[in-house]
Image (tube, rainbow, N blue to C red; front, side, top):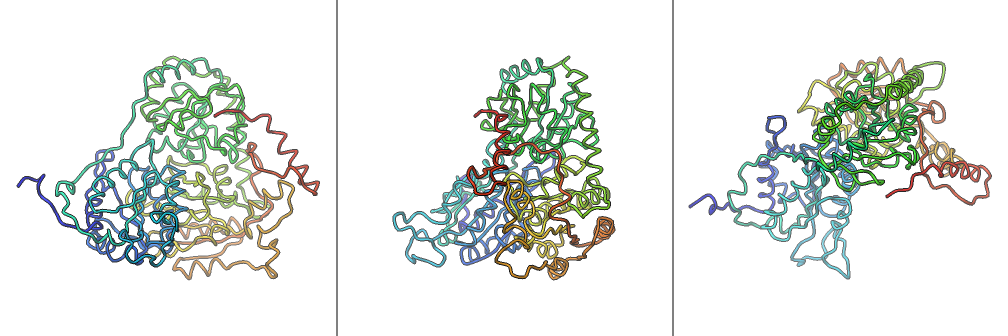
Length: 623
């Protein structure tokens, strides 16, 4: 009997796990298992069959026990980011609410173009026991269930109704997750009966397979058009996005900028493409950016956007640039490459930057333009140095960032997410090494910080076990999702967590005030249904989850606590109160479109609306 004729009788669940454990990827000449393992919470929808299969594969595919399904998805996203989308984790959840808890993290992975595989329980295909526990009945369409809600937030979706279907479905899901243009989460619904059904699978299907991520060569005509435009530029600029790192094109970006002397600005996702000290790094751009980057963006005549989807915080809702500026967009994704009437160059960033460098031989940006950009950066650096320095003023996010930045190892990874800290980290953090900053702002998702850092730390332990993962988190996000402090302690994946307490959702309170509104329901002290406000004892709470924890009163004490955390062998949590009103980074912000009331009885709201709208004429119109 030939290998093509041999079969292995397995359940659907067993076949999925056996196939996954035999998928590998080649990275820089070394083979790694493509799936690094999974995060799981068992219930009746996945424990009896998928759980049975995972038990036998627990060495090849380690299963990390989650505390919350949403946080499991965030951890998987953090893992994928650390691995630059070259490896992924799966998440498994039970049917019903366990699975629906993954919706937010699936949306985060989709917005950030991150691979994550969801293996989730589903209702019975036979429908004989219907309606079952935790089933959502749709009276007009019995095929419609909770799992269908994932269709808008994943790149690949399937529901397995027969064991043979996975022979096609799993490779398609993997191909999607590894595709540079279509990368994102994949969802596979596993009905509880089908998980246990057996089938005679072809033995050859389970043979070891080594994957490689495709690099798409750019079209020669598109490269030529881009070169022709760039050679006319008197004030060129590069916007470096997160795709530069995913393409592993940091060296090519740097070479392109250096050879042609083109200033570089970074998006939030593209922070840490270049060191802070590089003479062509002019700083972060946009709403949470720097005066230096935004100053040259307003003057630039040709802008090369590399690996960015040009979201509104990058573009200042399309007010950051001259209306006459022309864009060249280098992107693996056709959808992103064609935004705002760009000259698209669809292709891998590494290959495209190499092609542009070679074809633009002899071109250099005018020296006075480069000198002006560098002068702007020098002034911005002076502002940041003052901003992060402790002094006779209230504690601030920036001071905490400065204290950690001065003491951390250059390879330590910094993680922040929604709230005020993404802006403060983006503006004030000085990059010490490429690829060391993860500011989750693609979906701006509170709660990602600790969970995403836990996933990153699992990956970091595989890559650089001697480095630390550092979390900046506000009290608002901490209260939303903190249980992976416990996960990190249980799994012995050390984190250093800075909890900066400003008494509520202070950055939204700031937005509320900036639009003429009174403080209302954001700070704990301003919530009308709270008769007696009090602060959470974060130190005690973190210690109850097994972490080392302490509270400090100022940046100097924070620095000493950070040294102790670096020396410790398990997760440390450092808590410090910061001011809700003072100490924000006030410079470096472009306009941002934010809906404000056109009609109000309050003059302050009307005035703020008029001021906000006064910048709208600068907005570029495009598609």
